[in-house]
Amino acid sequence: MPPSVGPLESVEKVASSNTVVDFPESLSFFAPYLPYHIKEAIEVEGEAFISRNPGGEISGVFICDGYERTGTIYTRARQVFDYFYGLKKAETVFAELKTGRESEVYDIHLVDSHGLETGHRFRHVVEVVDEQSVTEVERFMEATHPGTNKKWVRVAMVNGERCLVIRLADGIAAAGWVSLVNGVGRLHSLFVRPQYRGMGMGEDVLFARLLWLKTRGARSAFSEISRNNFPSLKIASKGQMKVAGQVYRYATGLGPPQGTASTAKPRKTGQSDG
Image (cartoon, rainbow, N blue to C red):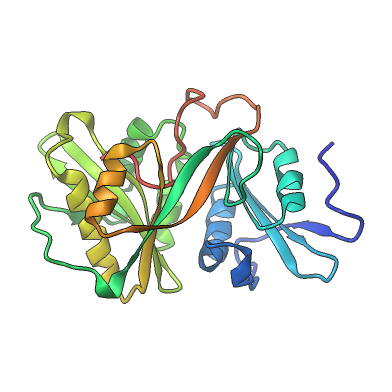
């Protein structure tokens, strides 16, 4: 049985991707994105839960993907974290709350889009793909991010996320995703195939996404990057991104996600190998 949330605190499962909820900014760095993340999770057949404190105010959100067996807990309260963690619905759980449990640290890298220097010289052609390329992008994500929920690619594109790619004769050589929600951009899942690393592709995809956001009026952009991911850290620094917070990756003790090794990094969390 999961730990108790408290005698007067309630937890509700979000029943529909169209559910409208106002989340307090104090809840999480990701508060502007929470409605979007919940909608996306439900549409890929995941789950979302909301907890409330005795006064009826939202105290936490838990989003999980049953296929990937990953989840994210958004809360500032240890009691709420312990409850959602105790549900054991995910093999890997991300949270901004630092606990005594062993974890991998991801820094949140942030850049002000208005002050972004746009003089980057591109060495490769970067293309924004549309829904006609869904199958090709799905194959790329399955190959480079093992265990990805295949439904996510189509859902993401329908909901406005964009995948920017560099193509060579043998197909997609590099790709990175970008979303824009409430004036805030998010960069994630950057990946350059190993044989093409060191050619500046990761940097080109980064700046292409930042420029995409800037032309659409984004106030800022962020990305979560593991402190162990040195290639992406280097790319982020070239994009003038500065550390603005942390996310912690916890293991819950369940088995690995479908089709992945226990050390596999879940897609959609930060950059990847650049």
